[in-house]
Image: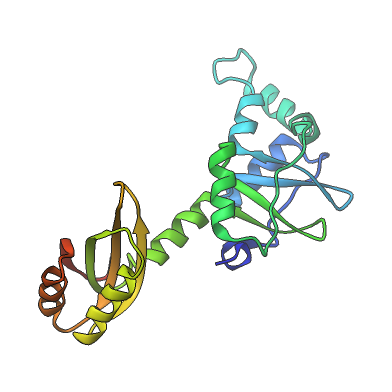
Length: 216
């Protein structure tokens, strides 16, 4: 899956001349947590609700409400944007690359650039949603968790057993938690799950769990 498949296209942007008050209002009205900053057509930064809260006066300040509003309406976003290279990604990059960048840099979103033009934004929520979709968590089916020997041919063997017993694999993921072993989590469409489980176990495959899952 590519970034372009899950990103929010054409995100709302602000400029360095936008005031903090305006940016906060845009976030509140649009339910945004972050806004890309564009200066003369070029992405120069991204500000988050946390960035704005850090530069806003503390609630414990002695300033009046009028003074607070005046201050926020005069302070420009250009004073908040960090002077450093903006981390970005291409719409044709794989989604897992976006997840890795977010994890490694401790950020919750990445601007998406195509030919140096902002075309979207991909967030941690988009990554979570993709994981939910990949695992079929909102779909009906039987969820099987297997422990396999981590060697060639095992996935083919499992697929063949499922197919020969009238099942269909709709979602699948492989995890490695033990040396020489692989945890296989899959969701099936099948009428006779018991036959599939019995055949898997007869072939020496450990079935950790088998459960029906309806709509979330």
